[in-house]
Length: 66
Length: 131
Image (cartoon, rainbow over all chains, first blue to last red; front, side):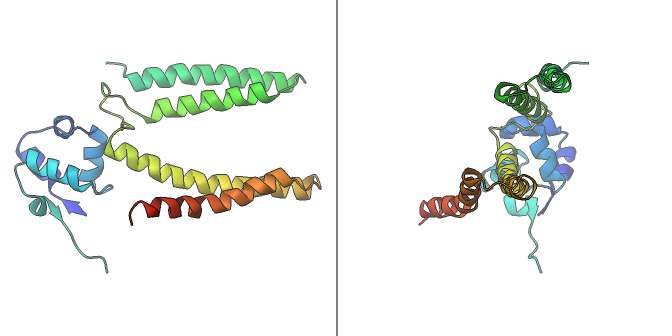
């Protein structure tokens, strides 16, 4: 699933480490999500959206698999 | 540059592993008996070394932590892969016993059979929680 985390994080001047600490996860988790290697849980998706002041559906882009 | 907890752990367990494995190898080379204690010691220190270089700690932001989301995902994925590797290794051990040494190892056959049953059995038990 694609997302806008990196783009929004950079716009707001937040580092991966800072976002990770705010969400209670490791920096690697944020990095893996930004690189579309790992889809976060619903709880973490909401935490990320809250930290980046955006809604979950705006933060993540879901495309049905063919 | 700050030397992280993970690097410290990796270095300490790496050196310990090298010493213990090296000593075991030396014992084997010199014809001394390499038994249960030596082999288990090698496995334990190697396991500790691999854990130390994999997992981060709260004060080391560069490694995934076992207690957080990605850590749990890594653990679950690794557990499933390890299970299949272990089943294949058991099958290989059975084959080696049978074709190389001409032995029928009943205990090993029993463990191999259990290893085939244990995954679907656990899945069935876990699935009952979500009914």
